[in-house]
Image (spheres, rainbow, N blue to C red):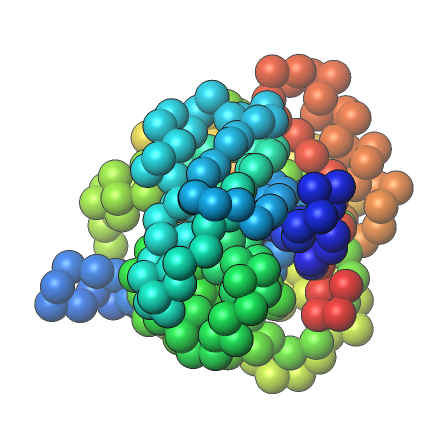
Length: 295
C-alpha cells in the first residue's frame, strides 16, 4: 500500500511475507531448489519513505535497524541502483526505511523492502516500468522479491519466479513469533535431506479460516524439520502457539525461525499473543491480519 508522507514524497508499506506451505519439489542442475509455496502477507511490516533528492541515500531506524549492518549494501539500495541503471535515470532519492521486522527470519523482510523500493521509485521517478521489468529486476535481487512485488496471495513456483494468483482466501489472523535467532536460508537448504514433495494447489475458494487450515494440513513446510534441528527454539515456538486457545494451525514460515499461528478472528489472536508474551517476553510476538487482495 502506498501513501504520501510528511516529506512530500511517498510512503510504501513492506508487509511481512508468510509461507502457508513450502514444498521442495526438486533441484536444478545449477544447485538451486525448485519450490512450490502458497504465500500470503501479514499486516505488519517495514515502512519505506521515498523523497526526491540530488543523490541516492538510505537512512534506517526502527527496532531492527542495527541488525542490518552496512546500509550501503542493503537490498533497498541495490534495488534503487538496478532500477536507475535499467532506465538510465539520473534523478536521485532519499530513502528512509523503518525496520520493524526481524532480520533473517523467514518472513521476507529484505525482499519486501526491495520490492517496496522498486514499486515506490517507479512511481516517484515516473518511469512507467512494466510489471515484467520490475519482476526481472526483482528476480536478480532475490528469490522472494517477485512475489513481494505482487504483494497478494499467490502460489509461487520454480525458484520464486513463477507466480500464479491464489484463489479467494477467507479473512483470518496471524500470531507471528520469532525466538530472536537469525537463521541463514542457504544453511537450512543445505541441511535438508529426504525425498522431494509434490505441489499442493487448488482452485476452489474456501469459505472459512477453519476450512483453509484443514486444506493446509494436507501440506507442510519441508524446511521446518531441518531448521528445528539447527534452532531447537523453533519447536518451543510451535508448542507455544499450539497451546493457545483458537489456534487452527501452527507452522514455520520460509526458512525460519519465525513461526505463525492461524486464528479465525482478531480477539483470539490478540489473546494468544498476550499469553505467549507473558511466558516469553524476550521473543518477538505480533498479531496481525492476513492482507487479502484489495486490502
